[in-house]
Length: 98
Image (cartoon, rainbow, N blue to C red):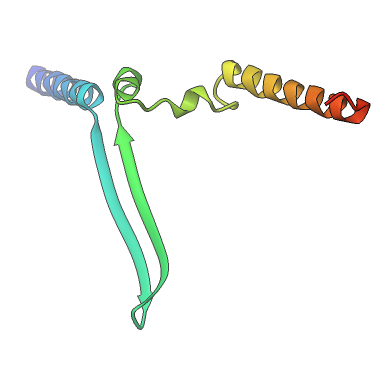
């Protein structure tokens, strides 16, 4: 029984090490799916998957979640501010000030 526990612990450590390396370095998986009939493209799907830590993604310039209003309150505030400015411009137009 002790041997099984050691193997399990070693496997878990190896899996943790692999996951840490993948998140630290990042990994890209890419593939394309194309459906054709008689040399006519009907559908093309390009699949790109990036697995990385948030820090690594930010280092690579990927930060789309910071502008997504469903994922951050900062993006919501920015959207509200833009909407308020647009409304102010519209009010000025209606008043004849612009």
